[in-house]
Length: 95
Length: 373
Image (cartoon, rainbow over all chains, first blue to last red):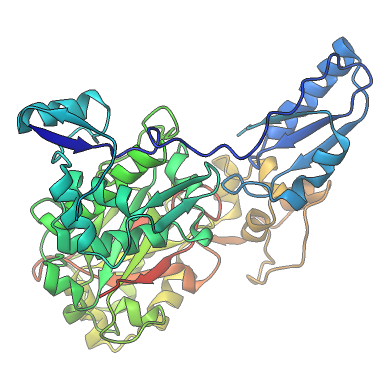
């Protein structure tokens, strides 16, 4: 009999430190954040999505934010406009 | 030491190898089943406690402990005494400046190159001689492999899942070698990187596949280096990123005899590894989207004399670059210091290699860490 040890971190569980934000009941008049991940065309895609959300769901203001580096997560400070102003944030990668 | 950790109980060794495949714990080659005694020996050979974090990856919010690294190092086939090198290499790729998430996941399919300097090379048999980039050397093969297994098993970099490499390349199995310091005309790479002679180090780089630079026909620095510059200026991989050159001892000796130092060699290569803006335009390498990135802009937008004008991305930038003199030279990298020179290979043969950085952008820097003794 032998035991082999698990090399993964999946089994150990990735710590979840954030709570899921409450889902809004509707999007009418809601401020929507657009977060492009730092690749060249993410915002092109997000702007089109915002147009469609405006047309179909009547969203309100849009807050646009582009990461400067696709490999590095946003700091809390950088994310502040999204956290403070938006009920919903859409993020995209576009290369 | 007894470890109390999750695992799978099995009857025999061969079954264990198959179970590792079934669990998707391998890189495609068989692994050494990581039993508790083997992992305990691996861990004991390094200076770290099992819960010490060797690598934190912020995009995934995952910490790789010395324990998990040891399990993967056993699986890779490492001897316990290699573990300090594996740990130092993980610390190097985990340095925030290295921005591991990009090279670990991008379509570019980078390998994690590990260049080893100092006395640890001899002590562990990390090879820097003939066929140093090829098969046949346990330390080279398994230290680099341990890094890849950590990416696969701890950071979710399974092919097609988080590793989105369009093609990848064989260096992704393992790409670890020693500098042949004894054949170098210059100070060891580690000393050039700011460490003391006699310190053992690892230097890491996110590398695309290497390009052979073949020359048996000249011993003069300029004609010889022109071949390297030509490979570096290939449009397929031309970028503002860094370069690694592994000089064959024979080529290094030509530079030594001509008394070319490291800085002069780097400067000459940078000066001659360029394409015209016209070449970049006709091959689609000046996408308008590039002009929103300050570093790509700095790379493309130059005065005709090579000076860098002050420019920040704005709505007119694409037009201004388009209107620029098309004979402007666009170099590989942003300066001579972007070219890392090291020496390795057999004593016979004029075969060196050039490794471009991962990414069409600036990519990630070289990072050097000391190997703990």
